[in-house]
Image 1 (cartoon, rainbow, N blue to C red):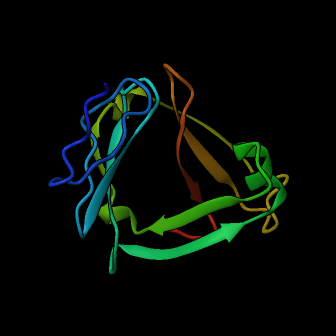
Image 2 (image 1 turned 45 degrees about the vertical axis):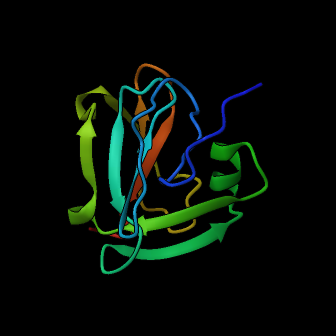
Amino acid sequence: MAASADRSKPYIPQAGLANDGWSKEDEATATCFCGAVQLAFPTQGPGLVNVHVCNCTDCRKITASMFASNFTVDDKYLKHIRGQDNLKTFGQAQSIGSHKKMTNYFCSTCGTLMYRVGESWPG
């Protein structure tokens, strides 16, 4: 019989190799699949700026899905807990509707997309 999770504490099922993620009322973490990179970000304002679903060509291509669930965080609220030096970037402006550069930040070990930074939304 499988052991049941302790429901008295916040529970995030393990996905990938990292098992130290957490979520609380005003902040949560995200890790790449291999666990080399971990970020902390706000779950409410003022650091959480926007939440939206997008079905633009770029979002469909980068997620291999029909849409992406996105959230926008003010730069000064994004924390790199570990692995910032493990991030690699790829950016382009050709397919972006604004024709301004969108830079993608990936874990260089496992390839997980961690976040995107767009020239159209400085900060």
